[in-house]
Figure (cartoon, rainbow, N blue to C red):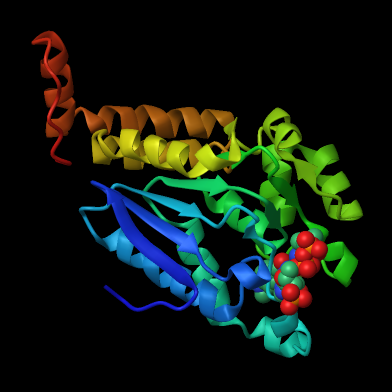
Length: 260
Ligand code: DAK
C-alpha cells in the first residue's frame, strides 16, 4: 500500500475503504500534501473494483479546520490562479463515482466543510460544527462553498454562514439538510462504516447510477432529470444484478450481486 504522511488508509470491512485525515496537531488543516494524498487515495479507490464505498473521517476534535492558513499566508493571486494540481485534486473528490460517506466530529470549517460536502452522506457526531469562516481572512469559500452550501441549505442560511463566518452546530446542520444523521460522537465513525457496508452489499452498477442520478437533480431542470432517471432505470433492466435481485426476491433468498 502507498505510504502517506497526512492520511491513513485502511480497509476495515469488505468493500469499504476508510480514509482518515491525520494532521491532528493542526486540526487536520488541508495543506497541499494532504489534498494530494487524499486525491491519490480516492483515485485508487475509484479504480479498485473491490472497493464499493469509501468513508472519510478526521478525529474527535476536527474533521478539518480548512485550508492550511500558514501555507496560504504568502501566496500571491497569480500562484492561486495557477494551482492546477490542487484544483485537479478537488475535482477527483467531487467526481468520485462511488458512494462517499463522511463521519464528522468537531470542526468542519472552510475547506473542511467543503470537503465534507463532497461526501454523498454526512454523519455527524453531536458537537460537530460546520462553517465557512473564510470571510474573516478577507476571502470567500474557494472549493465550492458558495455553490454547494447554497444548494444544500438554501440561500438565506448559506448567506448567513458565508457572510458572518459563523458556524452552525450539528442540530442546525441536520435541520438545514446539510447532514443525514447525528449520533453520539464516539459512534460517528461506526455509523458511517455501517452505512458504507450496507451500500457495499448492494448491486454496484445500480449504486453508481443512483448516485449519478441524485447528483443530476442539483444540475438539471426537473423535466430533464426525470427523463434522465427514466433512461437509467430502463438501462438497469439490462444488468444481471437486476435479474438476480428480482429472482432472489421471488425465491425468498438473499441476492448475490456480481456487479454485472
Ligand atoms: N490552518 C493552519 N493551522 C490551523 C488551522 C488552519 N486552518 N486551524 C487550526 N490550526 C492550528 C492552530 O494554529 C493551532 O496550532 P498551534 O498554535 O497549536 O501550533 C492548532 O491548530 C489548534 O488550533 P487552536 O489553538 O486555534 O484551537 P482552538 O480550539 O482554540 O480553535 C478553531 C479552533 C478551529 C476555531 C481555530 O483553530 C480556527 O479558527 N481555525 C481556522 C479556521 C479557518 O479559518 N478555516 C478556514 C481556512 S481558509 C482553495 C480552495 C479552498 C480553500 C483555499 C483554496 N483553492 C481551490 C485554491 C479553503 C480556504 C480555507 O479553508
